[in-house]
Image 1 (cartoon, rainbow, N blue to C red):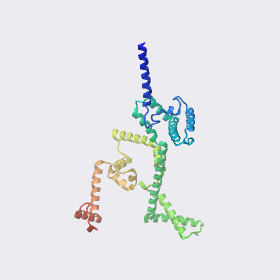
Image 2: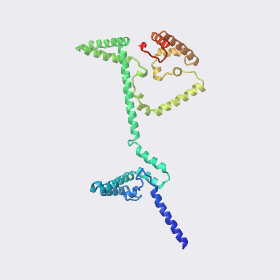
Image 3: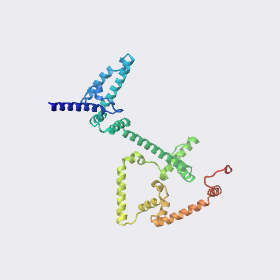
Image 4: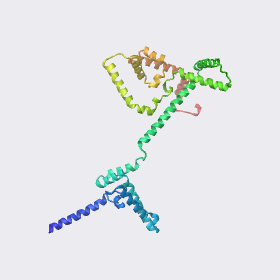
Length: 339
């Protein structure tokens, strides 16, 4: 009999400890605080979404602050209404309810529950993929507009260069005379004639002048969106190019072709693809004639060019004035007499 009594006392104490623990493991500051969200809404953990919504509407109608008249009753109802709204907000969302159930089942993961709660609260409501797509689209539009602006600036500049403008005017006059010879009468004003002439000059320059480098005519394939779409192809092409280069020239020791020679020269000069493409064909041919793809030849050529640049800089009047100023006053010094 005494043994059964001791077992009964032990089980009673254990049940009391479990009930206290079940309340203590609820964390302050997250979800429903020290209250159980299911108990706030008066439903069990197995309740469906419809049952949770039905219970919320009943309790919200019962504890709505506007239905109470006295200040104390209104204040108490308002507090209760906030608890009900918070519990419903958590349990109606499947993912947040799953996190809450995980907290109830795993109370020992103290910091992990705070992390999950605030990660969900602080996460942006807009889909990150949409944000990235919009950002890439804006960058692509700005990039394309900027490229066209640079190209337009280059065309307008070449329209002012006498050599290109005179040649374009000759072609424009020939076209104008040809149109007049077909019976067309010229009844346009001088302003209209000049505008038409500039239009023809621009067209002639665009058709006959090969503008390269950063001011080249923009292409759709150069914008960021297209580059991202063809990125797998670009990576595959680069890997193929690298393996082909390694096999042909490192293992098989085959001689370089013209394209490979120009590539090596560009790398030695540390120029980008657009910068190197902007060079004249004659200048690139000179590099090939001097065999600058050979490291020793390039180093000799570079030393000569550096010496020429230093000599040209030393003979520059503005540079001489700067050197005299530095010699007399030193670097970073400035006085009222200098003005």
